[in-house]
Length: 143
Image 1 (cartoon, one colour):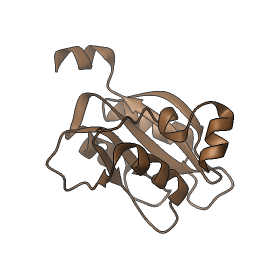
Image 2: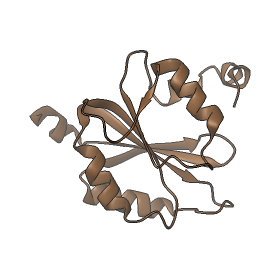
Image 3: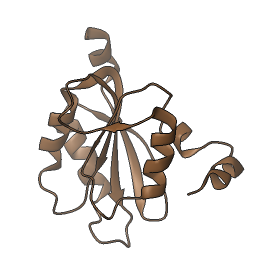
Image 4: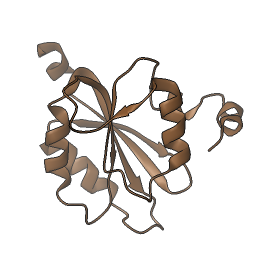
């Protein structure tokens, strides 16, 4: 997706993901099938994407996930550790007609087991769907 398409909708992709300049954004599951235009838009906003080996507290996690990548619940439990109490996780899964499609119910179930709640989903480019996960409000206030 290019900047013009984002402007036509009134909000850029970075806006839809809630990415702000200076945020620490961790990326997991990168492979040659990811949406490079989406990555570029997010990098343009935050400056860089850090990998899962970072020691920083992160504001946002981008998790590219495909059927066959392993156990989604385990991956979500792992990303909660470096996540700021008010942070969010974006699970990016291939759309229905694409290889590696993941049922939305599988994402919701894994999120619940990992202590996260699904809040929204949208088409994040031609091949990917983005689902936002956050800690429940009661969990945020305790941290």
